Amino acid sequence: MHESWKPFLNDEFNKPYFRELSNFLHQEYETKTIFPRKELVFRAFATDLNEVKVVILGQDPYHTPGAAEGLAFSVPNSQPIPPSLINIYKEIDSDIGKHANPHGSLANWQKQGVLLLNTVLTVEAHKPKSHANRGWEIFTTATIKYLNRERPHLVFILWGRDARNKKSLIDTSRHLVLESAHPSPLSAYNGFFGNHHFSKCNEFLEKHGMTPIEW
Image (cartoon, rainbow, N blue to C red; front, side, top):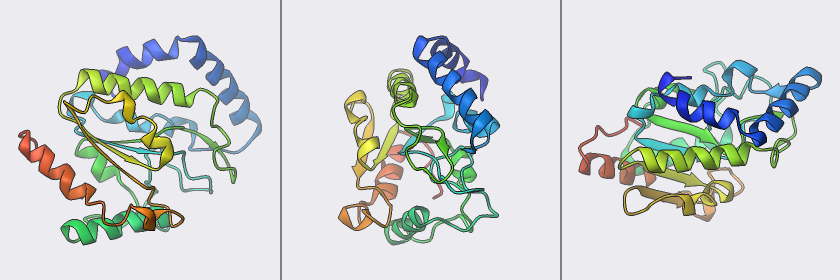
């Protein structure tokens, strides 16, 4: 975690809901297979708060072995590119040309100031949404509120119902909110394809004097 996040994170970690969540997670990691690995749970917060330009909000981590690495939609280079990310790359290709990543890791986006955050940060192996309603949603709501307050001119990209539920937390007079269906094969044709989020994001960043993202 980058030290710029410490005031916020320390404040959240000391709240009763997070202590309950921590106790639950300790038991889960001791007795079950949980993704991502403990040391990767807060990997999204390695991005300097003061350099965050874009927030992409996902759902929960990949629940298959070796895939989750603490960044929403991202997988290690050694892993096959998952269907949702294939669809993200397809949309980039149709929107702005060729996507820059030759693999499934989105660490390059993170280095450019993209906060790749899931609404729930852990999951039990092969059980999607198994850690929903345990406290993570409170934490990520607090994160969005904090970003909304502390940073100017962010782009919030909300894909899918869980992410779009956070829209009310964002001041749209200061920030750009882009929302659509989730890139999952189950929903991508219901509004994800053709959303032009990548070009709209970069147009907003350039308008406010920031370097666009190399998608």
